[in-house]
Length: 143
Ligand SMILES: Cc1cc2nc3c(=O)[nH]c(=O)nc-3n(C[C@H](O)[C@H](O)[C@H](O)COP(=O)(O)O)c2cc1C
Ligand SMILES: Nc1ncnc2c1ncn2[C@@H]1O[C@H](COP(=O)(O)OP(=O)(O)OP(=O)(O)O)[C@@H](O)[C@H]1O
Image (cartoon, rainbow, N blue to C red):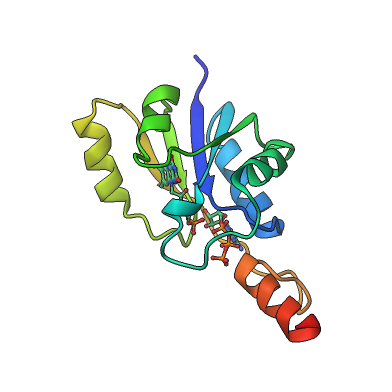
C-alpha cells in the first residue's frame, strides 16, 4: 500500500529550509503532495509576492515532490479530503496546532496522523533560511 504524505506552505522564495522540510516529509511515506497556500489564507505574515501558480510550479519541480497543488481558497480541508493522505507533515514553525487539525480530521472521517518536521539551521553565517529574511536582506542592500 502506498503511504501518502501531505506538506504545505507559502513557498514564496524557495530556500534550503524548504528543501529540508520537503525531503523530511517525503521520507515519512512513499508519495509527497504539497499544498501551496492561497494569498487570501496567508494572514499571519506578509502576503506572498509571487502568484500561487508560480509558487506551485517551482515546488512541483523539486525532486522530493511528487505533486504540488494549489490550496483551496476557503476550506483548507478540501484538498485533504480529495488526497486522503496517511500523514500530514507540519513544518517546524507552522502556527497550526496538531491537536486542532487531528480533531477536524476525525470529524470529517479522515484517518491520518499529524507529524511535526524538524527545522534546519543555517550551515554558516551566509545562509538565509527564511523568505522574510531574504526579502529583508534585499531591501537592506538594494532598497
Ligand atoms: C493541513 C493543512 C492544509 C492546508 N491547506 C490549505 C489550502 O487548501 N489552501 C490554503 O490556502 N492554505 C492551506 N493551508 C495553509 C497554508 O498552507 C499555510 O499554513 C499558511 O497559510 C501559510 O503560512 P506558512 O507557510 O507560514 O505555514 C493548509 C495548512 C495545513 C496545515
Ligand atoms: N529553515 C527551515 N527549516 C525547516 N523547515 C522550514 C524552514 N524554513 C521554512 N520551513 C518550512 O517550509 C514550509 C513553508 O515555509 P514558508 O513558505 O512559510 O517559508 P518561510 O521561509 O518559513 O517564510 P517566512 O520566514 O517568510 O515566514 C513551512 O512548513 C516551514 O515550516
